[in-house]
Image 1: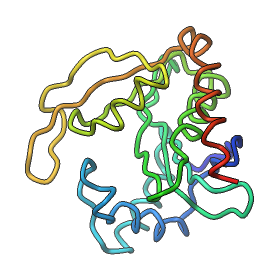
Image 2: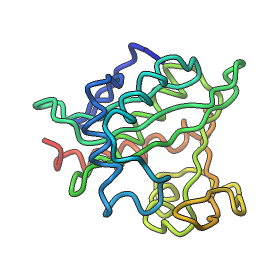
Image 3: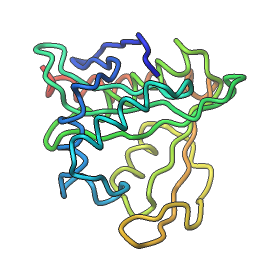
Image 4: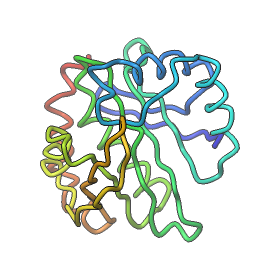
Length: 192
């Protein structure tokens, strides 16, 4: 969706995706250090640009480029999508951060803030490939509720994979927000 939501904090800014971000996102998605647990991506830049143009037509999809506040350098991407019409819930994902950039806590905090405070969603959930132990651990450490395992929910590089399902509703967000803020604040110094 072509949207205008921007959120900043901890030295990081989430701003609407643009077509000219396609090359940067393709570089991240084709990086073997980063793409082990995501769907395969065509290395063709025109395919990525066309996907981005198509994204602008979807009304239930908010895609963000992460950039450093100090200089606007792109460092990752994240999205809120599959938004139900009644705003009862949505999924967040397409989360990818450049190697060596400590933007995970800040970007997670900001995406919860956008979804549960700005957009007024009741619940935000994410699916993490069960084998991706660092990211499973990250969500738990931020206070997301682990609600189950989705068996064979993904097909990545020729293999069926399970997803761990995490969620945060508005009530839980109020409870975990101070801890999430503290975690994001501790890593913010790496983004300055």
